[in-house]
Length: 298
Image (cartoon, rainbow, N blue to C red; front, side, top):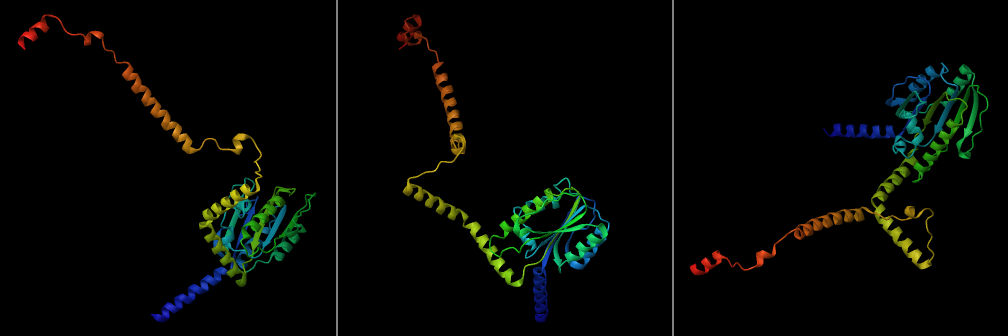
């Protein structure tokens, strides 16, 4: 029993380290290309599937992307790569097929895929360095392979920001393509073991900071008020009056409703009391025979 538990623990540790050495892959195209999405796959099997489809030359432009130093968790937030998420989820009407692999073991040889498209489809190669932030316009309509290399993501808390910038750059490249018939192969490489510990520490710090966010906001507001009082120079926000100030809060709105109801009840009560009518004869002393009979009986 004891050795069995040790064996199970060893297998679980090996599985964790195996998933650490994996990274996701994204594929989408404006052509009908059928690929089964899977959770785990090897780089060899994915390369074979891509080769069988790229040999048919389904598109005019092929964008081959390399994003080193990432994991599946980096794409978990909808703010890290909104344009990529939109195309993978089928929200773009131009995209007709897409598939993802969350954990790819091994590294896909992009140069082999590029040479395949150049040979089979007669496409010209165009290399783009995303670190420069520039992309040359394409004037001709001939088949082309665009090899886009993104820099390695930082290990600090700016990973999401850097990934969002890369996503925006990719969206700009796709918008500048002369043909709307394209295929995108988005490959990634896993985080190294040394970087993985740093990334985990930064993610833990970000989780802790979310719980302490209200406290930090209060401190920032307090400091900003003190700074404005000490300097004496207040900068007004540009825009109309109703955009700079909020004149009707939910509390004020509820107060108006309750006050209106109370005033309506008070109006009904006063109207009911005022509508009472009593004749003056009700206050006169009765002097008839009936009154004399009552006095005799008394």
